[in-house]
Image (cartoon, each protein chain N blue to C red):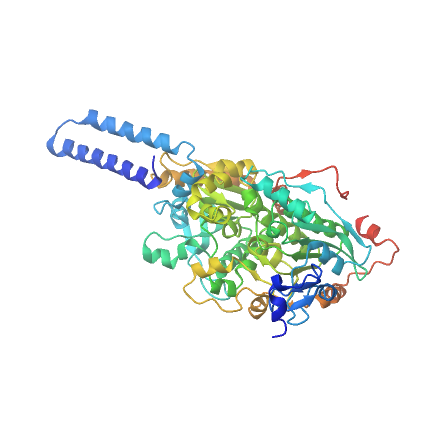
Length: 288
Length: 325
């Protein structure tokens, strides 16, 4: 095979600059990094959707210059004084430049005003503690008050963050409460499940969209496969806890390739009858 | 004390001796009352030592004790009438979640709760109290029935976790829990939640939204089982004892976090030593809270319920960083 030469990184010649190629996590194809990034980190060969950070997701979905981050000043105070949590937070903050596993804010998507919350698996597996729960609740309430839609994008593999104990479990109820009111006000909530979407997040806001979209191949499920296998006598299906499995079992409305995600969301909000913002200052329109 | 099991064994041995002495007194008319009194005092002392604010790990053992009264036991003790209703009207009837119509004095209510089993056969039938999607959907169906007829709802929580097998995943266990969370905030009748024994993560909160959340003294309420937490953090499930302390899963902790409003006291030695006493405490607490809640207007109820959960969480607001609205 032609790509066999690239497969062993050690054998790469010195004149290939670091990062010029990126190997697909799934098919192992060596991809030209710049081209792969232009392709939204989707493998040109097999179509595998590599993880997107919360910032990348916002950039993909929100109109240029039309995003206003909300509540970026919220930070965990390690309420249980949980062993190793302070260090873990510090390490993840340095690694990602984020204060916690979420970016949330208000903006426009193809001119449609909305709020958006995106969890990021790069920060403690995107797990939900008090900060993630509070920012989601505030972003949803912000949308309810302004009578605009809200988008929730899950990149959460860790579920409810155990380092904040029962307080994390309560975030499941809190976020669901905010969404319940948004629904009751006749407004549209769309959930986008990306790799990975698991556990306490899937069992709360991750399942509460009027519409639930998923990215191809994303891991979506209640508990990790290893746990399920331990608990199971029956054999685990090959596609267990993938977006495709969840679609086949009626839990997901549509699987949407990343390149089509923004247009698909816009179509949902047109259906919901959300008027577009016609202004030179979209940020003011969604934050005022 | 080495372990909960050792302790329980020591207590039952002492009680066996007391019984034997009492029998001797009866049958042979030998007065052993001084010995009996001494042994009884010893039992009381041991129980008082052990059951005065036990550690998180000990409470985990107490909460999981198969002799502890379960949901159906409490239903029998608390209510004068109970008519069980089955099925989610969609897929099946989950033995791990029971529910029905119950009468507390003059008031009819809907009661739902996870049910564990005592012997092997019953445990299997009840799936160890791990409810499946159809269990959560049955619970919600019954809660909506309560709403239709303006009856309060009482939820009894006693579950290690929700069922996480392939069939439950296929039928949308996450969706079932999430949907309950959302809908319970909109129900226009009073909801009282009681954590009887194990309050296990998503499986617990799936019927855990209420206007009042009560918790038995030795029950636990946790985001993850201590063994699971230890397995993730220290790669060693045997360090559950340490994890139980770190997780702060006792009733006192839950009150401190604001997740629980009131602790229901247990008889000395835990609810399993005197189930009737535990049942009386629970009934008195339910009567008191029902009286308060039934006098409130629906809008007040749902508004207060929202505010109650909305404020849960602890964080700081840094002065630096992007301005919030």
